[in-house]
Length: 457
Image (cartoon, rainbow, N blue to C red; front, side, top):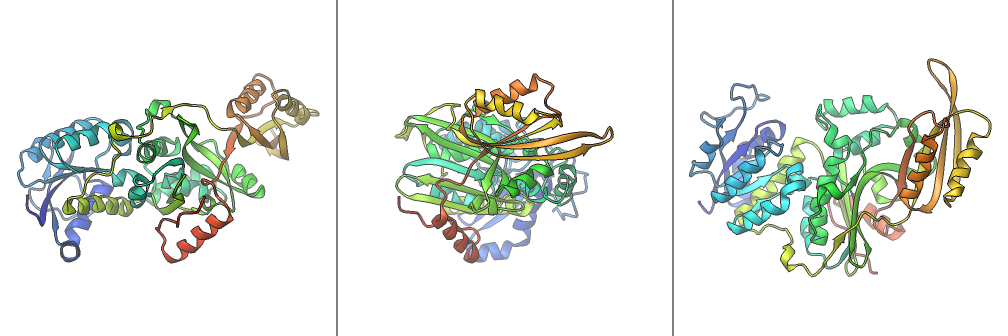
């Protein structure tokens, strides 16, 4: 391996892989001039070498359908995985590490399920393992998270696709916005991982490992997506002074207990998270000693992902170590719990417009000792049978989520409801207040991607 020249093999040459190739091949002189080394793409693993690849001009002999060609190529120093999926991708990466190659991945699902083992294998072989592209949207913030002293809470918008949809949902239907996201390249035709919250869950697992030193089991994390959110919900939220965002949250709920969950939530319009629009992501952490820090950056699109991969290649060139907490050296012995702190809630129910229906639903909440703080009631005509249906929005005082769910389950056993209810937590960026919001706003004006100054606690 040369000190200034590194051979790169790409696993996959789709949208992201093509973006990486264009970046490395098109800016060779600029990269060498600025960083003092080069990255030469030596091999590209593909399924179909005859496929047209968006006009990419690939050198002769680059494409292969056999991973062994990469393993046996002595000119390959770094394997960059952008093919997605878990099988055979996981096996390829373990083999690459065992063969002495550095590895960089953009695979969020793989990191969410096997990140701990992959990093451990890289360390066994004294290789760099880069995962910045699997957390595009906050990878620049990783060093700050790892160097924090005692993080107690982490809240983030981790998925650019769903944030784009929720931003646009005020003007269009869900299906219309989703199609726009696909057309613009922000969403795949199979959008399940994005819209059902699985992509957010995988990023949250990585972020929680960095912040708390605990690699969570993806099966333990409660996840709900945004497919049940409507244009009407976005309108009601705005009327009440909120925006709807898909959040990933992990926080300490007791001295030695960590909880984590994913779901759409209402955040106050004055909160920094409410101001994150389009495909941007944002992450906030609260450290007992360093205060509150946060950042925002693009979280979807081939360019953002390609740049995240490039940042890891630069780390390889500089001989940097993988930023990943060693569980054996952790001073925190945290146990996972599904118990969540009480929260206020937004609940929308569609009901047949009959006398006493509001009073009946209110009695269900009262019997479960849940306080109603605000109510919006709007009638609408349901086509084609023109039966009048009323949407009722309840704003509920602090309570446990399972208590609210119990009421909705009770209502579901009656003939009261005319559709599936919507239940959303009310959250905010960690310890958000006017001072922090002001700091975020000022920093955003000058430097779009920058951690905030720590707040004194």
